[in-house]
Length: 329
Image (cartoon, rainbow, N blue to C red):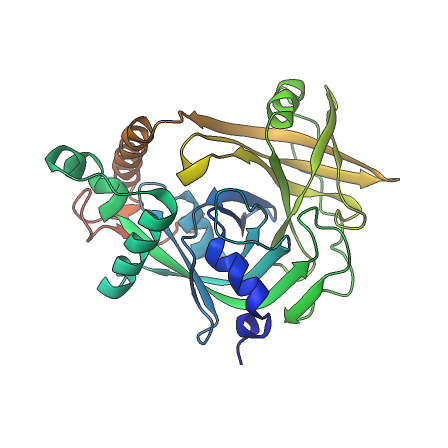
């Protein structure tokens, strides 16, 4: 029986019903980046895999996965989906991009997308406008090696662990970045934005090299950084690179806001302080037509940029596009 199958029907209900999740992946510097994705409930208990899709127009996460396939999928929110339980579920394993998703899988993904996100846009204009967004979309299969289940969405309580055991000890502190650990963007402004969002997660790398992500709250913000709160024991002591994501969404993933940072986490004497070093974000209007117009444009620009930089090979916007191997830098 696979690790995923051992976790039981409650976990399967969460995996099949959540409309969004967080993907955490490893950076070359030893940090972790969290990004929200739409899983569409695709999983195979017998094979022990969970599948999500992404567009080659947004290649950064795929480049990171190519360098280090260890990822975490974090099921942390129940709004607007079909799942009913309140468990916080983390899957950890190795990601395998599938550049040629089978027709059967594409059909299942389309059906799941319609069920969770509403009907697709059709017609000559939408076919051209969404070509890069849809036709360069690939599948990523995560071979699940560990399932961590906590009893509530605050990530409190002792976890049930299936498959690979969790590391016996927390990760060691990491070397201080050459540019220092303090904030490099306006931390007070970042804090104001994050405090408006219902879901804020912090991602870091465990002692065994796998990323994970835990829910946090922004309790304060100053020029020194963000003061974070979390359930007991989920934030590792010491200093390390970490990623922070705040997001919100409405039904069918229409009306999305996302705020993402990379930075430095310091946990000492019961106080957790986060210094953001980079900051990215967007707000998508609660209108499906405007959302798809924006997604189509971003995918087109992403494909063109990736091709100019040599990261994407193949005729632009075609299903034959390929993510080029990562450079040795």
